[in-house]
Image 1 (cartoon, rainbow, N blue to C red):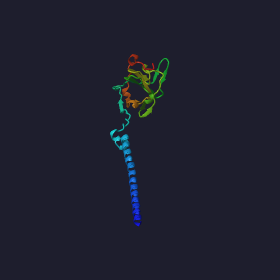
Image 2: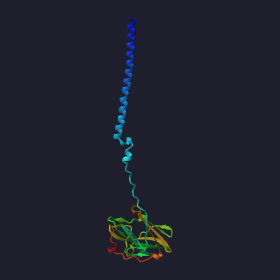
Image 3: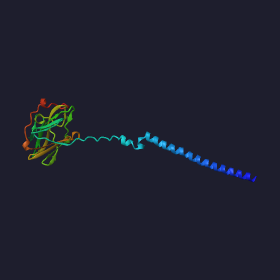
Length: 230
């Protein structure tokens, strides 16, 4: 009877050992699929999203935005002997004349005491297919180092209209600019920057009394009319 009890006790102990080993294996086996599943998910994400794998930026570089083109600056020089000429425009001096008084039947323009009117006559060709405006706001002048403003006249010297106007496409236009200056002036520097922002072009001219000359005869057949009909 005693031996029988010992055998039962041994069987119970063995059963308990077997039960403990089964729990350990089950626990270990249960964790393994979880780790394996996580690895598979990472692999799938790399395939679906190249950014996670680090290959996307190398294989398909992003387009960088192009910088806007800035016109290359050009400083054109105009003299009575030679004007400025390019594919879109032509500008030349056709006369430079002093006046103490400009008088017609309707109006009289008289310079102040000790001063004269200095009138510059220009011929401009617009080679584009759009009208171009010669803008007074972009013109500056210096007389013997002192900045001066252009003057407004009632009359049109030598029949020329003012140059500050629309110039029709593919046409010539003649016009004048006038300043009231001291009688004993020596040098005038003129700058026109109306094409600087669009084409990088600034036109410059330096004139003295040696450059005074009678303007070309104005003719509507030579110069045409501007697009405003003046």
